[in-house]
Length: 202
Ligand code: GLN
Image (spheres, rainbow, N blue to C red):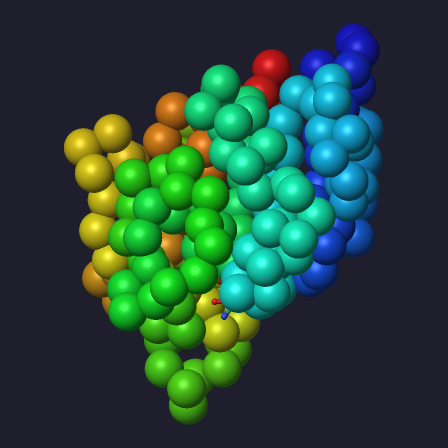
């Protein structure tokens, strides 16, 4: 059987942050990963990943590389996007108490560094029912969530599905072809979150 993802060209925004790990995860699943730094490299993509890092920095670099409006436009046209951690922040419509360049493609309001300064990073086993949809007997093993100065989703509009919560706060969500996680699936060996995304793309 041929790999369902082998013809997909997935861009990974490579301005700052954990982009190499995303590219590796996508390649392990059989898709082609393309690192994106310039506007012209956005042509012909089937989807785009916005990695974790520092959203203020990523946003400012997107502006100076003339990528922000271009990516906003592609998202508005329906290009699927996966945003992790700082990437979740970038895709949000609004940041609580914040003023920074955003793509605003998802109807979510997010809080940066939401788990507090003391708790810079932690791991948690997450229940994510959406991962079980294609799994045998409809069961999904917990997903290893790695949180690093993570945001949470404060609220979401009617079109937003919250896919997982931790401590009562939204930490993964989907809206149409947009998928976001507050944690870092690319820093684990568990490919199920990337595969969920690729299934949204094909
Ligand atoms: N705290 C960062 C931000 O708000 C996100 C951290 C991360 O991506 N690991 O941009």
